[in-house]
Image 1 (tube, rainbow, N blue to C red):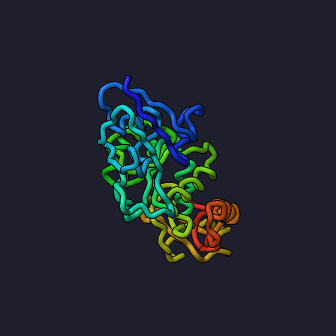
Image 2 (image 1 turned 90 degrees about the horizontal axis):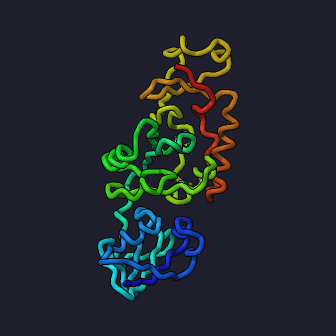
Image 3 (image 1 turned 135 degrees about the vertical axis):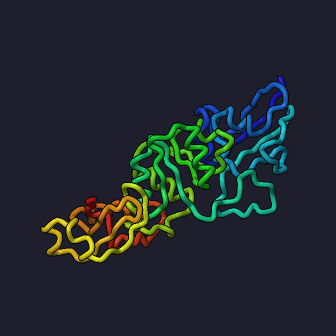
Amino acid sequence: MPTAILRFYAELNDCLPGELRQRPFPYRFQGEPSVKDAIEALGVPHVEVDLVLVNGSSVDFGHRLCHGDRVAVYPMFETLDIGQVQRVRPEPLREVSFLADAHLGKLARLLRLLGFDTLYGRELDDADIAEEAARQHRIVLTRDRGLLKRSVVRHGYWVRSDDPEEQAREVVRRFDLAGKARPFTLCLSCGGRLDPVDKDSVLPRIPPRVRAWRDEFLLCRDCRKLYWRGTHHARLASTVERILRMSGCDDPRSDRTSGGGCSRR
């Protein structure tokens, strides 16, 4: 049977069985499968891959495997300039926005807390998530590698951790977002933009005990929830600080004045 030698690098090994990680291994195949077919058959979603070398030359996903080929598969490079070779990833999105699948509701809320545009696909199945992300040019976030193997998905990330805060750190590190965070600028419920609002215009919605000690309020332009710096703002600010500090950002901007404390319709 025809056989190629494959080797995956860095975090791509997370997707492989333990016995195949961090080493070259034989891959037996029939016919002439594409390198994309071979990569995904081993469990690695194509959106995780940025560069494929076959016998030392860069190729695209459509390249057909031949007996004896030596294939090296690399993730996205953060610091290495590989502009002179053929990358398999599409151009990065100009504006980073996300669509989190139904199992990542807490992650979606944390990304909104950090100020990153994130839809939560609670009511969507995999096909709908893939189509909606493609239509809106969003990055799919999921714990389901099968979702990322759909051909319509061009930008995506397989979330490794099952802890929401670590998931948020993963996303911030993966997409180099630490310096782009704008905490407390998005609605935690729907992701809409928060705008300053005159206190008098929302006075009937403000609890009496809050009217006496708070003058700055924000209103979600989409769901119309009202936000102010409430008693648990400090806890949320601490969460922001932990996520960004452990993701490599020394300036979490957690002292920004706005929502996250309390909200009422």
